Image (cartoon, rainbow, N blue to C red; front, side, top):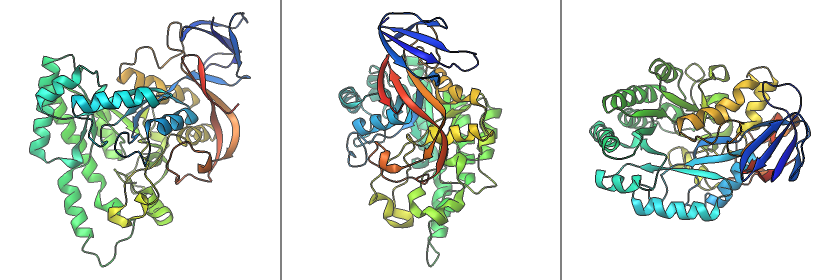
Length: 414
């Protein structure tokens, strides 16, 4: 063995285990101690498969004053994540062969965690070139396109699936552009706008209509649909009824739109926080749920430009694990769901075959959890460039205390 992780608790198993690692892979799992290699003693804490965040915005290239692949990946490791999937809305957009190749070079140089990249829609000819670089999926921002363009996008992706190795996976931001424009224009007629108005400018019905449309377009073009940052209960029911995968963010689970009255534009995000009667809740998490943070960092200046001009996005890589483990400790969330919603389900969806579980032959990516560790979330300890969070100062019980990638420690709080 190159490394042995000692004194591990494993989910659904009694007693302490030792995990042997050889060439970055899991080579042995045993209750009986064994010799050979460097020792990592995790002191009876829980060893879980490395957490995967399927939805981050590392802003690199073009917006690196907000975040870059170095700080973003350090933030991921600090939060307990071993793999991230980055979105294509950088500058330039990651929707050409050259732009994707450039981002791969940037990530290879800077990232301290495993990464995958999504690509944006373009002409069929350009997307055929993009496929040779193996993007993990294509991302469609439905709130930026009219219905005619969306029809064309999904048609093109369907054609791409038939003519190339593309697997047909399309991740969607579901909000209806026409509804948003109509409601925003209405609200702008007010004499004075307050941050809470933003949640009504992009109402739940905009998401619900968009989810319905995305399901129909994906089915029509034989595509595999994944709904990003799902926030509406009605949309959740639609996704489940149609056997469509989805992800929840921590802010949509734990906050409602009344938080705008406390935090103002700091919690502006798309889709916005929902009214309590329409929102998803911790109780909606089940065996099939995926947690995606939608880690979307901005500068404080970006966040303080008023109701309409402030940038939408909340950093979440370093808050989501303690927030969810606190729910576990409060009895609101089953501990057995944690490895599924933070690792296994994303690995399955994105076909990350060597990740998502602790088994012989899998990648030696682990997140070590101390369920008893307590404290207060403190943005001063964040690795991200974004120095704001609605959860700053919140007490938590349970934390990721070590992050291990290919058998090597990349973050350690033990």
